[in-house]
Amino acid sequence: MSSNQLFNVELLEADALSIRRKILELAFNSGGGQHLGGGLSMVEIMCYLYSSVLNIESIKSKSSNRNRFILSKGHGVLGFYPVLHHYGLISTETLSTYKQELSELISHPIRNLNFGIESSNGSLGHGLSYGLGIAHGLNLRDFDSKVFVLIGDGECNEGSVWEAAMSASSLKAKNLTCIVDFNRFQSDGPTKEIITQDNLAERWSAFGWHVIEIDGHSFKDIHNSFNCKTDFNKPKLILARTIKGKGIDFMENDNSWHHGRLTESTYKDSLSRLGK
Amino acid sequence: MNISLSKNLARQWARIGPRGIYGQSLLSIAEDSPNIFAISADLGNSSGLDRFKSKYNERFLNIGIAEQNMIGFSSGLSTLGFNVFVSSFAPFITLRAGEQVRMNLSYMQSNVKIVAIGSGVSMGFLGNSHFGLEDISVIRSLPNIPIICPCDCFEVFKAVEALGNYEGPAFLRLTGASPASIVNKEDYEFTIGKSITLIEGNDILILAHGIVVSNCIKAAGILKEKYSINAQIMNVHTLRPLDDKIKDLISKYSLVVSVEEHFVNGGLGTILSELITLESIDNVNLLKIGFPNAFLKSGTYEQLLNRYKLNPDNLAQEIYNRFTEY
Image 1: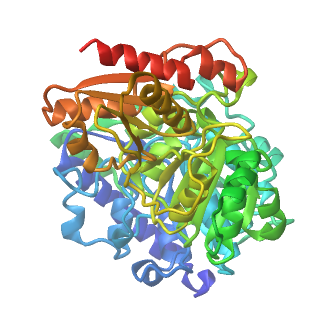
Image 2: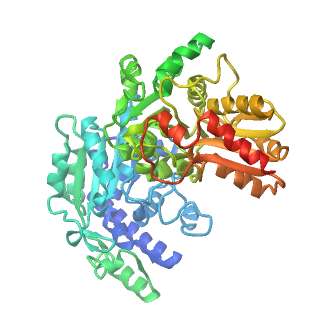
Image 3: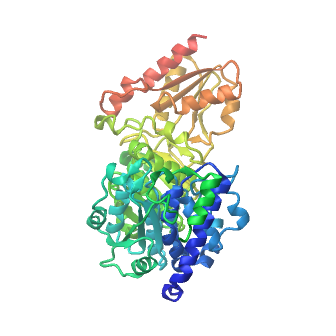
C-alpha cells in the first residue's frame, strides 16, 4: 500500500478530531490525574502513522515483516490507546478497561501483541535501543519493514537515548525513524529551564541522523517527512514541533495539564473547544 | 554438539579459563543453532569471542561501551527470533544497565542471556569497580531471570549449551581466573535448576557455587582426614530456580554451610536462610561464608580468596570451629 494513495488531509483531520474527543472521554471516564498534555501533542503524528505507515492487518496477524511502532514516551498512552481503538486494533470493550483493576491498559504501555503494543515502557530512554535492536534484526532477516519510535523532548535528557542514537548511525539503521514530540515541556516545566533543547536538531544531526524539522500538527509536513528519502543510509529523525495540550485552548502550553484531572465542568468545556 | 569431555580436556580448558571457554562454547553451539547471536559492550575479546567474531561475523556485534543500549538493543533483536548472548563485567551489566535488565529482560521476558564475565573477585587489582559481589543479589530481586554460576570450565560449557536451548532471559555468572580449578573431569548431566551431589557425607552439608566449589572439596578432604568429619558437598550451579531437593536435604543436617564468591548477604546464604524461615525448618544451623559487605582492598585473586578465608584450610577451620560449637 503506498502512503500517497492514502494521504487525504480532510480524512486525517477528521481522525485527529475524533481521537482528541476519545482522549478526553477516556481521561474523564477513568477519573483522576491523566497525562493529557503530552497525549494531545502527539495526535497528528499517530494518526498519520496508523492510517498511512503501519499496516493494521499485518499488526493483527503479528507478521514478522510488519512495520512496528514503539511508544518510548510511555506516559503518552492517551495519545496511543484511543488511536489503537480508532484504527481497529483494540475493541471498545478493551479500551473501556483503561486503568481498571487488573487491566492490560494502564498508564504506561505493557507489551501485548494482541493489542498491537510492541513494548513495555514507562521509564524514559528505553524505546530507542529496543527499536534499534528490532530494526537491526529486520535487516538481518532480510525484511524490508521499518521501525518507528516516538520519544519526548524531555526524554532526550536521558543518556541512554544518546547511546542508542550513536549506535543507530554506526549501524546505518536506515529502516529506523525516531520522532521527537518536541512540545518544549517536561514534567517540572519548560525544557529550556531544565536542559536546553535549542539546538536539538543539530545534536541529532551531529550524532549521524538525517534530521527533518516539521510542524508536528501539519499533516502535509508529517507526510513529507515520512516520505523523504534519507542520505547515506542514515537513520531518520523527525523533529516534530508540537504544542503540549494541542486542541484544547486552555490546555495548550499550560504545563499544569502535563498530568491533570478533568472535572465535569472542565471536561464539558474542553469538548466544546474541540475543532475550534 | 559432540565434544567428548575428558581429563586431558579439563586441564586444557582450565588453562584457558572460564571467559575464554565461554567464547569457545558459544562458538561451538552456534554451528547447530543459527539463532545464537553474540553482543559485547567492547569486551568481546575479554569474553573469549574473537574466534566467534571471525567465524560468525554477521552474528557478532560490538555495540560499543554502552551497556544500557546493549541490553535494550538485544531485547529488540530477540523479537526477530534470535537468542542473544550479551557479555560484560558483572557490575556494568547488572548495575549500570540495571533498569534495562528490569524493563526488557525481567518485565518483557526477552530471549537474552546475560553473561557476567570476571564476576566475584577474579579481577584482582582492577579493584572494586570491577568486582561482582552483589550481582546475584541484584538479579535475584528481579522476577523471571534464572541465575547460573558454573563451578569450572566444563560447567561453563554445559551451562552455555543448556542456555542455547533455553527460551527466555537468564543470568550466567562466571567466576575464577585462568588457570581455573577443576571439579569435573568427565561428562555429566547438567540441568538448569538441578544441583549436583559431588561428595556424600552425613555430618555437615556444604552448598556452594562457582569456582570456589573446588576449595570446598579440598576443605572436605581436610575435615575428613584431620577430624573424621564427613561433609556432603552440593554444587548449586543454579541459584534460581533453587533445586527442590535442597529443602529436604537441609532438614537432615544440624549444620549447613553456604560458600560463595559473593557478598555474604544477598546470595546463596541469603537464599538458604529465606528457605529455612519460609519452610520453618527447625534445628538447622546455617553458616554463611562469603565476602563481607564492604569495598575491599585489592590483591591477586588468590590473595583475596586467602584474605577472606575462602581457601581450603580456612574453610575447613571455620567449618570445624562451628561444628564443634554444638
